[in-house]
Image (cartoon, rainbow, N blue to C red; front, top):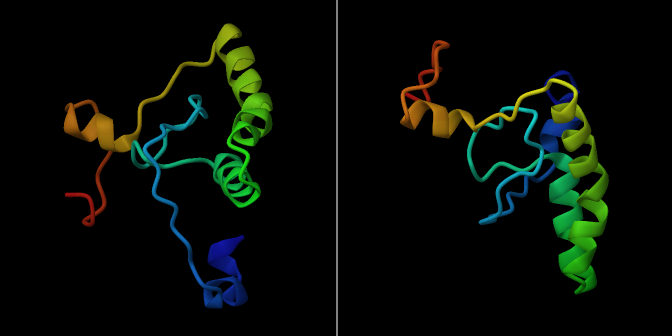
Amino acid sequence: IYSQNPFLKTLKKVQIKSDQRSRYVIRTQPRDSSLSTLETVAMAVATLEGRPEVMDILVHPLVALCDFQIKHGATEHQSREYRVENGLWTKPLPRSVK
């Protein structure tokens, strides 16, 4: 959606720095610090509301989905960053990563 919508590209970009690892473990994230959209929104709401427990409440369905998928054959993924650093990445890397 983002790449095909010029209007979205005009909006201010915000980056949230976090020491948390994504709980969306059935998808390969670009970096260890990358969070899914759901996790990012949950973190923003928890911060704005001053209620840290909201993060876990909102992310619980994502964790349950991943657990269900893993129990039925999906595998846990490491980030691309982790796999590159440990010699596990087998696909060609973009120039920005090399």
